[in-house]
Amino acid sequence: MKRAAATLNSSAEKTVLIAVLRAPRDLRIAARDHWYRIPLKKAPRHNFTHIAFYQPACFKPEGKRIVYYSEVAGCSAARRIDIFPGEPGHPEAGRLYLKYALGPLLKLPGAILNTSGTRICFGYAPLDRLRQAGEILGIFKVVPVENMMCAALKAAGLGFRREHVILRGGRVKYRLDFALFCKRGKLDIECDGCRFHSPPGQRAKDGARDGWLKRRGWTVLRFGEHEVVNGAEVCIGEIRTAVKFYGGLKGAQ
Image (cartoon, rainbow, N blue to C red; front, side):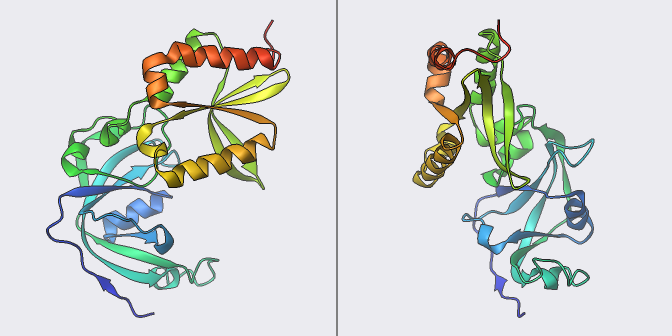
C-alpha cells in the first residue's frame, strides 16, 4: 500500500499525547526502531508534538507509570502487514494504522505514577506539565474524586469492591468505580469527573452503559465531581438509603 505522508504542524505548541502501550514490545520498538502506531479509527483529533508512553500493569515490575517520552518526527499511513511483514497471518493484518516516526526515547526526571488506580486512555497535556508531574492525575489537572469517594465509603463502614470488572464473552465489558453487593440487589457507584463525563458523546455512552447494567440487575448511582468534592456526606447518605432499600450489605450483621 502506498504510504501517504502527513505533515505535522511545525507551529504547534509543545503538546504531548499520552499513549497507552499494549505490551513491552511496543516500548522496545519505540526505543530501538523509533516509531509508534495507532489504529486509524482511533486517530488523535488534536495536534501534538510529543508522545509519552504509559506502561500498564503488564509491565511488571515497572507498570502503572510513565517513564519515557519522545518527539514526533513525522507520520504516515500503513496497513499492519506493512508495519509487521513478519506476521502475515495476524487477524488484523489489513487494518490501517498511523505510524509515527519518533526521535530518541527520552527519560523523565522522575516516573509519573498512577497511585490512584485511574483508568488511562489517550489524552493531551502541555509538555512542561508532563515534565513536572509526579502523579498521573496531575498531568490532566483532574480532581481525584474516586479517591475521595473511596475514603468516604471506608469512613462510613460500607464494604465495596473498587474497579469491579464485568465480563462478557470472557472479555472485560465494563469496570465499575465501586460495586456494593446487597442482600437483594447490586449497586454500581460511579464518580463522574467534569472533564471526562461532560461531553455529549460521553454522556450518551454512560447512558448506554447504565442501561446495559440495569437490565442485568444493577442499580447505578452517579455522583458528579462537584457533589463528591462539596458534599461527600450527602452522597454517602444516598448510598446508605439504597443499601437499606436492598436489604443491607451481604455478610453484614
